[in-house]
Amino acid sequence: MAPKKSLQRITRPRAATELKRQSFTREGTVNMKKSILFALVAIGAWGYYTKNGGFLPAVFEYSRPVQATESLQNYQCDGRQHCSQMGSYEEAKFFIENCPNTKMDGDNDGIPCERQFGR
Image (cartoon, rainbow, N blue to C red; front, side, top):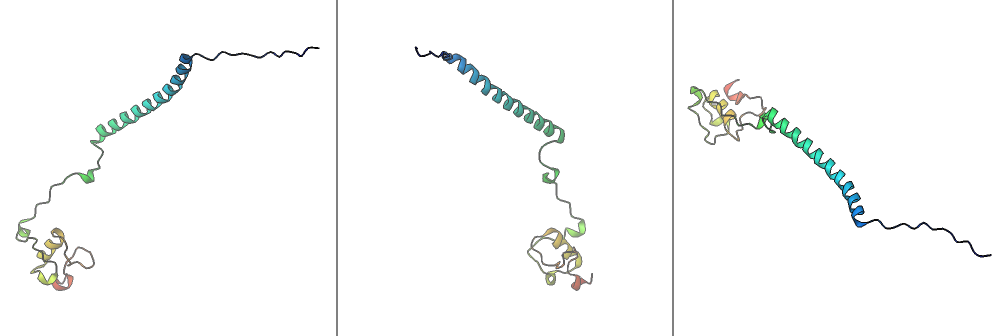
């Protein structure tokens, strides 16, 4: 008896253009999703920016310095830091509010030279 011949299915290789079209379609879908997501984020950011006037909070806005009253205009920051260098409570108050590196308010309550001026 002769051996049986088995049938084999022979498939042709796909054309190169068909393979490229399928891969382009898959990549194109992913790229399209990314593009749409980017566009939505950009539109949302633009809407937020126009509605709120910018991305920086109001804390960072420039504010003009407060004008000193006439009685405080006689004082100026000249490097003095200690209570023994102050002539009045008002002068010490001006220094701790307007000058850097003062050492007149040990308990940080906003009242300078409490022992010297009895406050």
